[in-house]
Amino acid sequence: MYLTYLLFASLVAAAIAEAGSTMTPKNETHTDAWKTVSQNETFYMMYRSYEYDAGVGGTGKCVSVKLCEKNDTTRTARSRIMYRDAQTTQLMGVTARVTMARSWNSTVDDIIRLGNADNCNAPANAATAEYRLVYSDYTTCDVMVVYGTL
Image (cartoon, rainbow, N blue to C red):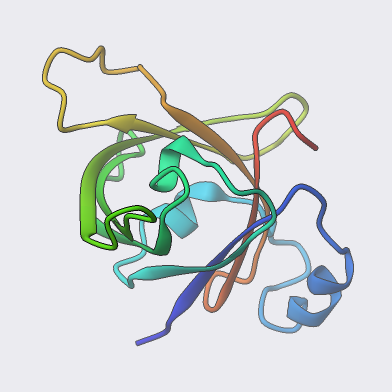
């Protein structure tokens, strides 16, 4: 089992892509968000470069994401996001509806959209947060940015 770490950043150093190039064939993209979302391993966020993120617990710390179920045909998933509330220090959780999208000029779905799956009245396509996968080695490192900031 691999531990996969989520890195959220406003700007990403290109050096990471060079380090992971031996793990992924040269003709394969490093930005297929579905390959990251559909893995059964728990993701742990190791770093974020901004304090508030509505998609992963606001200012919560100790964030993890675990896949609950996936549909490979529609490329949708349901994941459980856990975080420690910064004010109460209690462990909190939310179930997220995860959908994919493709950014302009991309050849793969590189946008991860999170919606609140706990809210039965929310439309299926309602997104509370969007992230663009900038790089992944699909085993230990995912680098994402809040969509629209890079």
